Amino acid sequence: MKGAKKMDYNLKEVAGRIRDLREAKGYTPEQLAKLTGVTVEDYLLLEEGETDFSFTFIYKCAKACNVEVVDLLEGTSSTLTSFAIVRKGEGLKIIKKKGVVYNNLAPKFKDKLAEPFLVKFPYLAEE
Image (tube, rainbow, N blue to C red; front, side, top):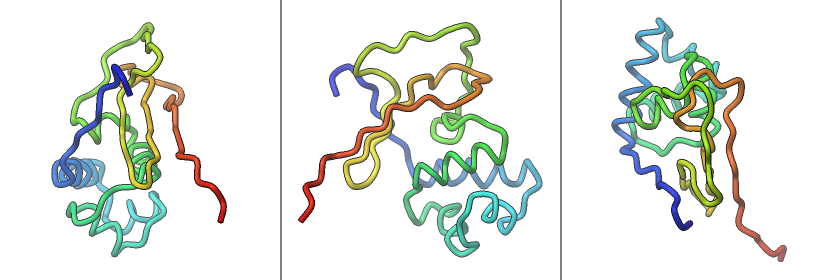
């Protein structure tokens, strides 16, 4: 996408932020696994950075810990309070598996009531 910022993140860095946040919030791995809808075994693999995160996991983890998605992915907090302009084709781009692309339309806006995303799925012809 022209003009889009690509979200490059290191699995180990994100996993470390998730572990640190879990510990800071006082959750056990079992509790956060339940809140994020994954098994304890899968959660521990995610927290160690041994497997890639689904967007759903990141979103649920952020919600359970009362932080923004961008806090987990980038390690920085949002700062805007009044408005943000996102031009066509821009936003914080997160590329995931199977060609699904998530564009965070307000990555720097804090205290959002919702996470605005533009999600693009590739067309797959049925066999």
